[in-house]
Structure formats: structure tokens, C-alpha cells
Amino acid sequence: MSQSPPPILLGVNVDHCATLRQARYRSHALDHGDEVEPDPLAFALACEAAGADGITMHLREDRRHVQDSDVQRVREQMTTRLNFEMACTPEMVAYALRLKPHSVCLVPESREEITTEGGLNVAGKKERIGEIVAAMTEAGITTSLFIDPDPVQIEAAAELRSPWIELHTGAYANAYYHAGRARELETLRAGAEMAHQLGLTVNAGHGINYTNIAEVVTLPHLHELNIGHSIVSRALFVGIATAVKEMKAFLL
Ligand code: PXP
Image (cartoon, rainbow, N blue to C red; front, top):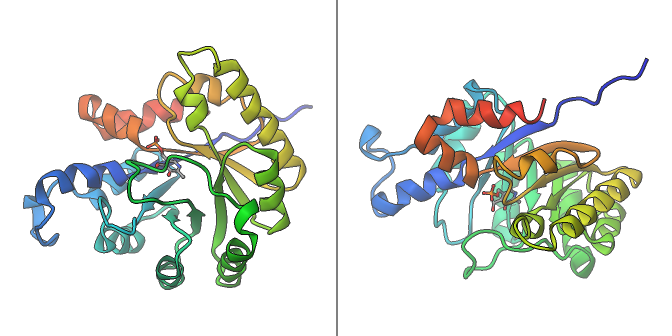
């Protein structure tokens, strides 16, 4: 009897809830109770209550959206898993080792970009990234590497014994209404297949929405999708519980 694959897990990225708060309350102390809204902790807990399997937060070097206290409060009060997105800096490595999230996702970070624009160059920074993977593994934290679906990067991630990768779906999402869409989907498919063969757990994220998700879920071996902007945007119209449930329905 053939078994159906397990459902794909949904990690909700709550960074853009913090973006909305920072648009008004940038200089406020964040402990003003209900005055400082929307609260990423309340948002994260509502995502969990609606069925999210994990929460992702990216504490950026410039603290443009998520603040240190947001991460701490979510870590303390959440009931699922915290996936802590971070740059490969000594400050963030030390922070993650203190925080002890369930997983870290290493991403490239530059001050100019609005959100994370490209994958991590693992092949070009093997020594540094290898040290971080080893330190996280030693601390019992699962590492994920956010990479483009590029065989060179996938090979490097496997070589460094990162247990997880997150395939960058941004190029596919950007090509969705253009001629390159089928090619980008095929590149993701080949990348997921290769990563699985090399023993990597395959996650994916960036630019996934309620339209392109139907095609994204056809990719093989997906463990978890990390989705932020589209869910936060939809929540404005239908509420966060419905937004999460509607996305979850695509993954079952
Ligand atoms: N995965 C990673 C590694 C990211 O950096 C981001 C956001 O920048 C996401 C997933 C979520 O992307 P989006 O907000 O487009 O859903």
C-alpha cells in the first residue's frame, strides 16, 4: 500500500507585522501595552492558534522591523517552533546561542535591500558558514541555509553538514507572470531533488503567495514553507486566523 507524503509544514514569518508597528511607533518603548500595535507576539500566538507549525523572525542588524524584545517574548511564550533568521555575523551568532531557538536560518543581509533578496553564497564562504553550522549543532540548534536552487550551493550545504536548506523561491515568484516561470519551477524541482538525494531536509520560501502556492506544493520533498508578506497582507482583509487556515489548506 503506498503511503501519501506527510503534509508540508507552514512557518509564518511575522516580520511584516513588526514592519507595520515600526511605521508608527519607531521611537516608542515597546512596553506601552496596547498602545503599541500591532504586537508581533500577539500576531505569532494567533498564527499558532490557527494552525501554523512554526514562527519565523528575522532580527536584522539595523533592527528595522523585529526588535530584540519581540524575539525574546515570542521565544518565551510560543508553543510551536521558532525559526530565527540571521546574518552570519559574530553578534547574531552569539545572540542565537543565547536565545536557543529551535532552528536558525542563515541569510545574507545587506542594509540596502528591502527584504532578503538573494541566497547565501555558501560555496564562497565555506569556512565561516561551516563554523556557524558546527556551533549551532553543538548547541542543539538545527541550521538551515537559505540558498538559491543552484547545484553548487546545494553541494556546499551538504558538504558542511547543514541538516536543512531553504530554497529561495524569489526568482520563481518574480517570474510567475513572465516567460521564465516554467524554467524557474524546473530549477527548483531539480534543486529539491538533488538536495534530497544528498540527505538534506528541504524547505522553501520567499515570495510565496495564495496564487503561486498551488504550483509550489508540486515540488518534491518539501518539509516546510516559510511565508510572510502574503499572509500578513491577506490578514488585513480576512483576519489572521483565516489567512493562516487558507494557506494551510494548500499544504494538506
Ligand atoms: N524565507 C526567508 C529566508 C526570508 O528571508 C523571507 C523574508 O524575507 C521569507 C522566507 C518570507 O518571504 P515572504 O515575506 O516573501 O513570504
